[in-house]
Structure formats: C-alpha cells, structure tokens
Length: 160
Image (cartoon, rainbow, N blue to C red; front, side):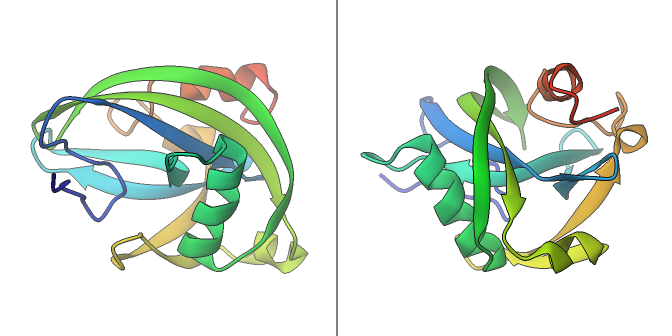
C-alpha cells in the first residue's frame, strides 16, 4: 500500500494506522535542534525535533542513529531515552496517531553545535534546514510537536 510522505517528515496516512516514531533532542545553550514546517490547512508553523519512523525489527535507538545519519550525515553518541508520548493529531487535514520514543543524544562532532543551522534531507530526498531554537520560539501559534513534548523536555531539564 503506498504511503503519502510529506517533505516535513510528518506522514498524512492513506489508511488510519498507528505509527511508531523515534525523535531525538539535541540541546545546546538552552536551545534544541528542530525542523520548522508549515501546515497549510491550519495556516500554522510547527516545530519538530529530528527523527522518524521505526522500521520493523529495528529498536527505537537504532532508528535514531539511522535517521540522523540519513538526514544530516552525522554520527551521534550518548543516547538516552527521555520518555514516550502518544500523539493524536491532524496534519494537512488527515488524522494521525503515533507512539513517540523521545531520546536525548550528542553529536560526535562538537563543531556541529557552533552551526546556527544544518542542511538536511528527508528520506524521500526533500531538503530541509534544521535550526537551533529556544523555548520562546514554541508558542500556541507555533507549537513544538508532538503535543506534550515541551513539558517532557522541561521536566528533563532540556528546555527552559
């Protein structure tokens, strides 16, 4: 069955199903690395950390390592599971349901933290830019998704 995949990494679904997703929080000086995208149906800007779907037979930590390598071409270390979120949402007019494993990690190359933005690619080859954003960027009008992520990060001391 074909799956519709958007350039921002969220997947409007052709048939309702639950997706397993792994996201990774890279934090530096009070900011986290996120992908910024626009939901045209809601006329809303959204922010989401990097990561993606967990493949069948793949542990979520392995999915993070693979996704970051695919998206940024970078290796990571010190993976630590922060928590799990269940996300029910609508994106591009389509309902979605995801279980999200949220990880914290560090880049092997410390110079990455000096870059204001990083050029990246989705699994379908679509380019995007990952940027460091502080908590002031995430509002009701420009939320950090999935829902509950900002609270989880604040509890873990990763977002002010």
